[in-house]
Image 1 (cartoon, rainbow, N blue to C red):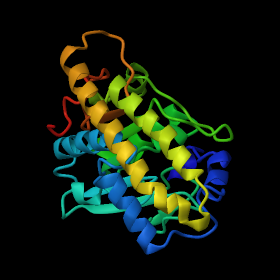
Image 2: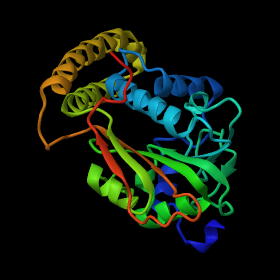
Image 3: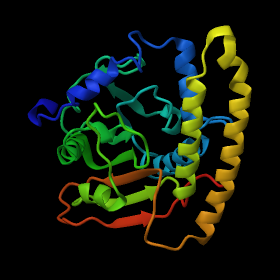
Length: 290
């Protein structure tokens, strides 16, 4: 069981779960539906459109490759569970989240990381949450423990993104993320966007912070929202053009991806190989075509 590892979500993250940014009560069904839509089907008038679009495209391609035959799936830190429909309809999906989360859609709520029996799942996925695990190597070991032989892990983490000074978080480069899966098979790291997507998302984030601080009295924020939506549309349009140019002309070992996504396979039972086959994908190679 997970208790054997001693891997727990950090207390700082637990504080985040009940902090003012999340609210003291569960999200309403209407808010939950809106959040699911922004994560799964972003719109160009959304400040992080290019980031989410690239992530979803690469995630869909990766799940088609590693999750097509998965029967038992674990979604770690599942949040609103916006990606359930990317998995096979026959898959049995277990959503895990931490105590105090406001989403209310997890099947298992626990501060213990992966409180499940050995070899319980064919696929373990953690989308934008693994960077909160205090001890990443121990976390990967737990993922391996609950995976069946030949099963896959899928993890995505941010690189260029704001962080909370009161919360323990980690940042990974592509090589460091791949290194965590040394000894696994078929390790593949994908960059979800490069400098252009990072610039676009951070520019949009600054604008969204300005929108958030517009006073709500006299419905001023509501009145100005169309103007901000237009600004996000322009920024995303410029970012789209820059991203196309970057993907076509950038030729360097230096990179600044917005996000990283890794997939890896637990070696089949009796496989004596101890080294991983590691591939590296450039930004957008597995994303939806534009």
